Length: 346
Image (cartoon, rainbow, N blue to C red; front, side, top):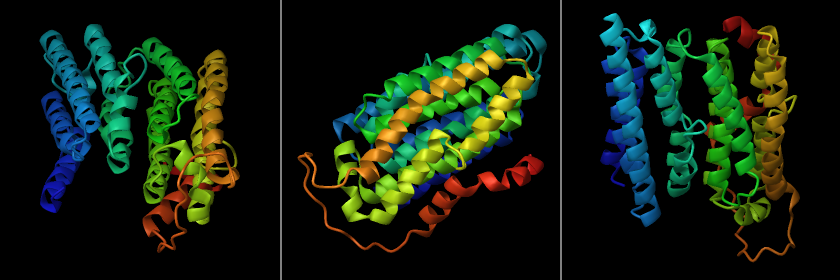
């Protein structure tokens, strides 16, 4: 892609996100979401492969439907209450429609079908944007309207997302699809807590973004798109494979890594809200995700040649250390000990 065009689309993404997260008026927030959608479409379809074009088309249709619902929800609320302020969403029907619209935008179950397909058709760098940056504006809208949302509906969708995200990722061989189902599962953890402790949901999102960015950038550096390629990556870049192992275990939420912090705090908050059954269910369902993270970790570091994979061996390349990746990986692994400081800032 032309560097100038790429710069325009990236700037538009930043602009759209900034407009949405800083607006108080529904029309401005909707405008930001639309700018975001239109800016990411060329980045999805830049390879001109039929699958990439298909992914861009699916993404456009789904996001257009979700944006229409956001507009409809805000107009219904304005009709009944005379308020266009985002924090003044009080009409029950508007709250219900908005929850569904944001669920579609995020890819929460039962509106998750588009997300693995779109991620599979996108390059890894665009996949990273779709999994992290594109989810920030909708999460912000949930954060601002969290007092008005239906907690029963969100809890149901959260439990279903954690269950299906873990269940459907079990038999995947494509790394992008595995990461898509991982994202759906993590969104379940955010959705279950957003009405009770919005700041905790945002903290979970920030840490999820850190860890996912580290995984995507590592896989992009190693050119890994499927498990069979991942099996031969150790000989090519052992240091990166080791970093990937630790980041994946952090994403799974194992102590003493960073990923354990949000899960621990969410379970604690759910117990405080007298929801021990939900806390137990979501904890047990996260074991499904743990299985495919362990599978990825096993493929990346423990499966050493010789093995039966019919895959061409790659040369061992000595690449210069990527500072950005080094910082992200360190943060993805080592933030748990400073959790008291993080909680003080919150």
